[in-house]
Image 1 (spheres, rainbow, N blue to C red):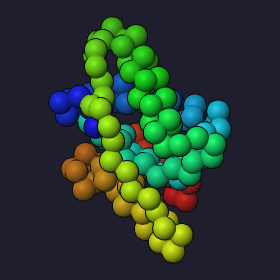
Image 2: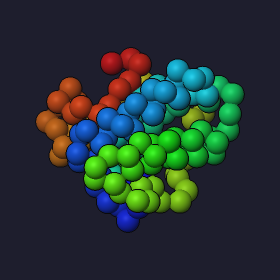
Image 3: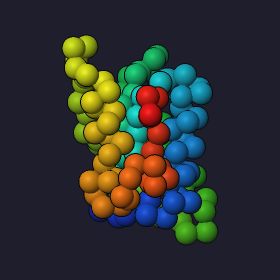
Length: 126
């Protein structure tokens, strides 16, 4: 969640900076993203952790994305609230159902009529 729920990522260009950091983490190896949606103020995501704890991964994501955002002409200072919400996925849960839930968040929030219209999401199965 962004600091004071500031809808920073209504600006798609700023949201893409976070997308770049999500993709960088996947390429560097600590995560394998199954789905994510960068909403105006939170990020919803489903990640397989590869080599690091979720705390370390989230710390890297928030600090690196904050650096990227604060290098833009519209510097934001503190970007993220402290902490995050997590939920472990059990092996018997349907991952595709969770992925669909995450990717449809922008539609449910009224940000798009269809998933494909929203520019700040991705999923391995869609």
